[in-house]
Amino acid sequence: MEAARRLMAATPTRISPLPSPSLPSRRTRTTLSPIPLFHIPTTIRTPSILSFSSTSNNNRPETECPVPLEQQPINEYHSLSTSFPFSWATGDAVEYASRLFVTGASFTLLVGLPVAWFGSAGAQAEPFKRVLCAASSGVFAVTVAVVRMYLGWAYVGNRLLSATVEYEETGWYDGQIWVKTAEVLARDRLLGSFSVKPVLSRLKITLVSLATSLLVCALILLNIDGDQILTSKEPRVRVVPGVYNDDSARLFEPDAFRDEPELQ
Image 1 (cartoon, helix red, strand yellow):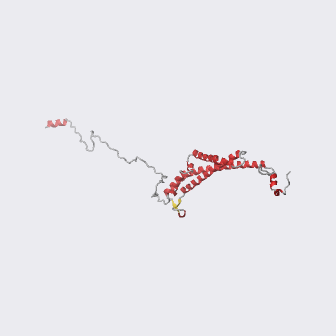
Image 2 (cartoon, one colour):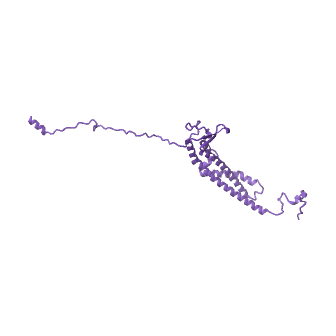
Image 3 (tube, one colour):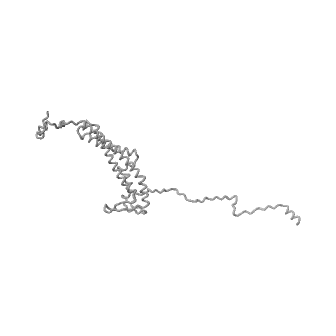
């Protein structure tokens, strides 16, 4: 027994640790799927304050707008921006100027020039004056068109920027006033400030330019007529060539020349 105990004490004993149940085995691979913290939508819808359905048959329930569709400022703006000739002011500057130029030139050639050239006697002797009159008529026609556009855009702009909307339910005798909600007021004022005011500024500049052109044409015509009056004045001569002279008048109306001395 004593010899066996000594042999066991001399022999080293290796103790293997027990496998922990919480630790995975080396041969087992565990894949963990990540947990999404939030969901990313595939399509993003950006809300727009100017989005409005003008083709719907009913009013929006959240605004409870009693104004008829055709009298709502937003629909009046859409209708005006696509109608003739109000849509000219919303286009490109080159396109806008070219349309006004074509309108004035067409009126000058088709209406103003024939009337100025054949409408009075002696047109062949004063070609510059007749051409200037025809050009003035074309400028005047363009001015009338621009004034009409300005009045239409100013009306719609005032209704967009105003906090109230005046409307008629069935006729002129039952006018009503609706106070805009905060959402509608913000949308209309944003549209009026960034879409209507630039158009009005362009039309104002056009009107100033056309008025200046008309003033210059009028001054030139007045100077031409004044020079002709000063150069054609001759005292005591009452003669229209081919129509009237004093000798023929004395033959037909002797009583009218009774107190005047006879011409030598």
